[in-house]
Length: 186
Image 1 (tube, rainbow, N blue to C red):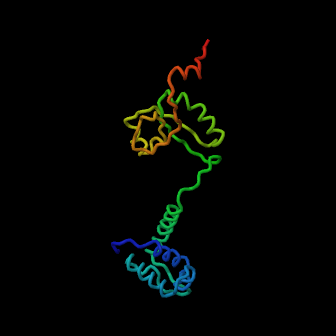
Image 2 (image 1 turned 45 degrees about the horizontal axis):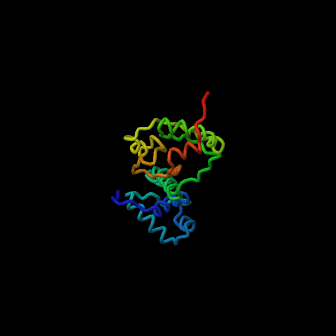
Image 3 (image 1 turned 120 degrees about the vertical axis):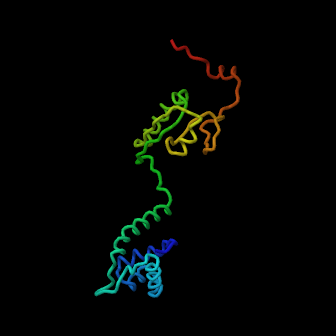
C-alpha cells in the first residue's frame, strides 16, 4: 500500500466507479473525460495495490478488496461532507440537549429560576443542570466538555471565551439603598 493519502476527489472517483461499474459511465457522471477517469482508476490501483475493478461481461467486476473498501470509502466521504458543511443550525424550539452550567450557589439561586423559565418557554427540549463552582478546575472542565458554561463574577478571568451577562454601574451604597430600599420579610 502507498504511504501517502489519496485526496477526496480520488476517493469520490472510487465511489462512482463502484456504483457505475464502468469507466465511461463514471467519467460522464463526474463530468470528467474517459482518460481522466482511467488515470484515476490507475492511481487508485497503485494506492490500494489491488486491481479493484476487472473487465467482465456487462461492465467491470469489483475485486474482494474493492468490495471491502466500498462502505468504508462511502462513510469517509459522508463524514468529510458533514465536516465541510459546518455546524447544523440551532433551532431552540426543536432542540433536545442537556447543558451543564457551573455557577456559585448564590449566583445559581439568583439566576436559575428566571433562566430556566425563559429557556423552557423558548426551548422546551433544553435541560439545564447546575454544578457547584470550582474556580481551580473550571477551565479544565470547560475544555473537556464536562461543563458547557461557567457563570462567574467579572473578576474571575480565565483563558476561556467570555461574554458579559451584566454590566454593573458604579454606585455607592447609599444610592443603592435609596433606589432599592430593603423590604421587611415579616
